[in-house]
Every structure is written in C-alpha cells, then in structure tokens.
Figure (cartoon, rainbow, N blue to C red):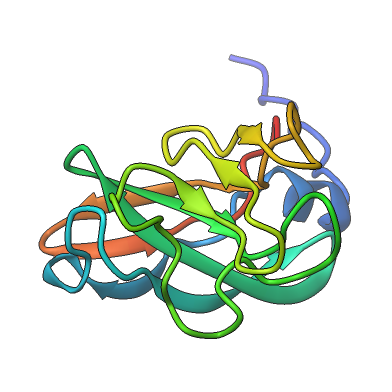
Length: 137
C-alpha cells in the first residue's frame, strides 16, 4: 500500500480565523429577571472591547452591544436598566428610542429601522454565556 500523502497545513492565521472564540460566562441564569435589569459586561466588536449587556425576555436570554444606533451612546447610561416601565421594549435613556428585545430592531425613534448589534448568547447549566458577535452579524 503506498504511503498517504499529507495535506499541507493551513497557515496559522487562516486556522485562527476559522476557529470560533470560546464562550465566556457572563452571569448566573437567575441574575436575569424577565423584563428586568440587564447584566452589563464587555465584548469585542471589530477588534475593540465595548460595553455589552444581556437581558431576559419571553424566557430567553438576549445580548447586544450597549450602543444606540442613533448616536454612540450606551442605552442604559450605566444603570443596568434597559427595559421600559412595562418590560416590553428596550429603551435608549438618551432620547427614548425603543427596540424589540428579541431582535434589537428599533421600532420608534431617530434610528427606526436600524438594529442593535446582536451577540451570540447561550444559556446552559444555569449560566449565561456569550460567544461574541455572530459571523453573519
């Protein structure tokens, strides 16, 4: 039997680009109340570390970069309060724009039609994990 030919190794930088970042634990699942305060943390976006947050809505955890699409302003101004008084929409504390918590789409305000930058969030084993910005996002 002839010896097998080895496939040439991919360059190190190509392998690194294909590898997804490891999920990072953000908080315990019980830290997120339905339509309540969010948990702030930092995440990388376009090679820059920026504020981010996770919230719970309809029983599911969602995460976004903490940046209004109208102006570069944190939605919560550092308070951890992302929802409106009814717990149904995310709201920008600067100018009142509202966002759908399930997809980040602005449905009222100066950035209507634009979406928050979503994060790949996973909930397992009683913890919330962030895997970063989805590749298609």
